[in-house]
Length: 221
Image (cartoon, rainbow, N blue to C red; front, side, top):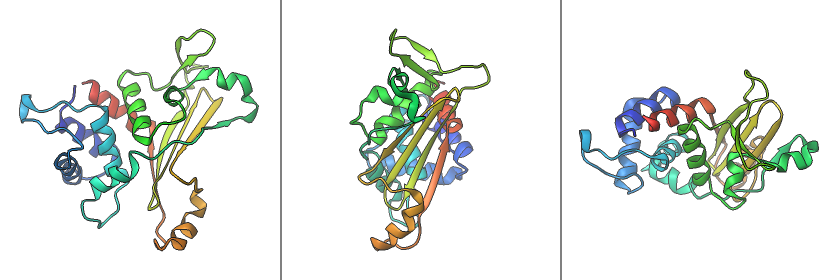
């Protein structure tokens, strides 16, 4: 299991934030009780998927110049509710429903926090690109060819809290989950922000599977 220094180093490498910024965000989350507080050195608390999830949200969904932005980002985003996933291609039909992807396992009523913990834990087990086969109930690697595994992306949309997670594997089945009380396409964001008195400052932050995999490897130790 990883301690906070290892998780900080991974977040610095994968997000481009400075070590000082990541350390401050983690410290603020600890003070708010969102990440466990432990001792130093060998007595430090192990970081788990929940801690990594909250730190990732704090770094990707904070509003600049806002007081205690790390804590407020987690409060706004972690509990955003899921919406039924969109499936592509449309003609996937029964074959799509017979393949249970990672987020399908959570059911339709889950949150952003649930989803991020699910994929971080899967990355920790080296199972980010796996699925359950409906016919057999067995977990399989999502490869049709050795060099084709697909992709995963997490997009944080600000200042109106919304998250989009898109997962595709083997160049075939793609599912998109939207989290938020209203599903707003990014192209409409500026207009919606203006209409709600939030100004013309739409922001999109994208996290790829490389970051999720790096966090998983760090937690695995």
